[in-house]
Length: 406
Image (cartoon, rainbow, N blue to C red; front, top):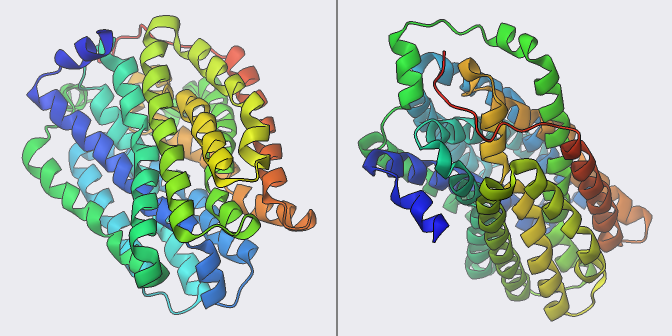
């Protein structure tokens, strides 16, 4: 089986980099998605509107590109591995601090700082593993790596179902300190990127701003693409638990089960399309996945029973995360050689910045239509799916690019 062959060629050091990157993104997403389950509870605790608390999600997303640029710059200068460890410790610590916020303004500031730290992880982790593995394995590894995101959401769903009724929203954030343990694995088992080490041995200086300026067309294109992608994912995920809780009045257990089923679909979709992109090309895989999401909208957003809602969520996330499964390989291949530690993550997180108002926008839109979150979710998904297909069709890909060339 080709997917097994793509993984069998990895040596011990490549496996360690791969595992660290997947776990890093999983635990990063775990900490982020704990927030989306407790929006309603935080609003009640702080006597605020859901839209006001949703601002915490927006601020987290808005600060991520600044963290991506800062930590990416450090990774170009000091290496992927040490900066990844520092970044993980920082976002885990801020997650813990969020549990003790005495007021909504303090909570919002802590979530913004968490977003700054979270912004650095994806780009550094993705460049570390993509620079360490054989080119022929990139599609498969990309699909698996990106599924750390729905896997983190799945873990958050499990933790919410098991512990929320007992420990409340503050207990959720205390559990979020767990990612700090990953640093021990990275410290003892993960080696530095061989591509970065070669450049470092040549004592090659990095002109970060100059490299971005010289490649401004590609940079602009990727930001535009990632803005659509972030509306695609966050528009279908961040307020979905709130949709189930407020519009359908479902219990903690039922919401947890639906979200677990949803993320199983997401993982299957990412693995399938990431692997498939190695065969048919990155752009074609993205376009197919983004268009497949559109006919599922009625089942996903307008069903009335838990079973049908779960089925819709499962099928939809196969398409949404199917498109996302191609992104780690696609962005690293499009990146200028000398700034791969910064370019993919920075462009990705700038897309997050421009899509960061999504949760607040959807909450206000739902309120305008009498609390109809299903309609708000559906409208954003329709626009995002069509945008991704069009933008991708006019872009380029570099699937056969060789990493490590001067």
